[in-house]
Length: 292
Image 1 (cartoon, rainbow, N blue to C red):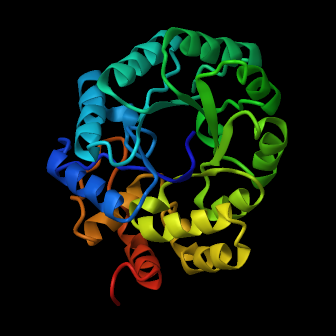
Image 2: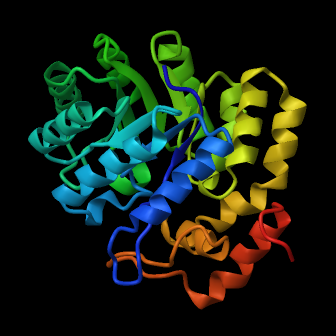
């Protein structure tokens, strides 16, 4: 159901930390024009952990309103409380999102049976297409492929975002690739993942290079390795630069240099360290996004 280059969009903020809806509208238009295949609102890159419930829902609503049906909007609705995740997913359904991205429960480290029951109850409670989201490096919890296989019994679980290794993506493609869409969450290996059978990427890099990411992923979907890998090489330094500090610190700084958003970010995150400015700027120049 979901495929291609899906942007994990930032939540733009003013200097005082307030959500900048004017900039959000500008960013949505940027993605429509550059053929991004879908938008994830209020995910990790969207600073979901520092938005309150009212803000969370409003950012999703406004993203849907700005998209005007021109591309799907997927709401980040994950929580380490199952009941809270159900609440957020219900809101997403009520507000017209086309899907929900639901991260594995973080901090409380549930066993595999707990993960299965968590996603099972959400799927049974909310009639909305749902994307599992596994990111072991952030959550201290790993949704194993055999648990994903069990969850494929639910018709509204339609995809998984796997933010780990190429080998894990290959395993998932082999196990569940005919049942759900396997998406990578790692920009640096996205082209290879798709060439190996994944259906797309939920991308940080697409925030600043949407056209390149769209073209690369669609070339890979067609099996055009030469084109896909050439584009990947042209933006490889950008993939790296956008993770010099915790996401979304570098990508917010990059968008500010592009005059697409202000530098606002919420504590405990802080603006990009001065020592990384030159490296991120050089990556933007090498990718043809900024002039040197």
